[in-house]
Image (tube, helix red, strand yellow):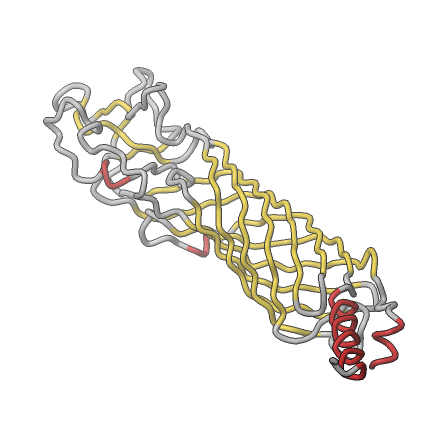
Length: 283
């Protein structure tokens, strides 16, 4: 027969593990971020390409090592740089005939609003619990999640021109229009995203905690920068009557990423406080 003493020890360990796991808490907070982009635009001037974002977040802490977080973010994303070997023009340079002069400087810029919803799983490297000011008050952590992002077309900024002049020698071009008659800076973007982050958590008071975190997001859309599969517009054959159809869009060709450096403040809404008598006795 299995010794009763050993059985009691096993049951005690199981209850201890369950109680430790069940010491969950819930937090609610706000976030301020600085956002930046990288993708198809070259030589981005990051001194002019940092934008603010803000959001709200809620966090459910399963235990001292594992949490899940949901957050809503809104703000802008922009960049100033170079897009070479393509016919481009800037919005606002239109003449009365609706034709555009080519921008030979090859400078490219965009500025779009952006909103995202994300769910991230967090893993703490050290034990951490809000409310502890002497121990378990600080930890580095990593996060991985899923989400979606929406970016509304700005209808301003740089866009693509057809390669042929509207009249030989005029120096004027018509904008490239898609099947719906939209210029390349006139298409909304909606995408699934994968956010990956790392940062630090720390306690400020018994009910307030802070987070500093960097998150990089992989998108699955290519027109956040107004350049949908841009390689098909670079070095095109100007004699092609089917431009840019002969440079068919490749659904796997996308390079749009964006990242945020954020600071968050969270308030502890609820805590189980570890009220497990068996666990307390064993401790």
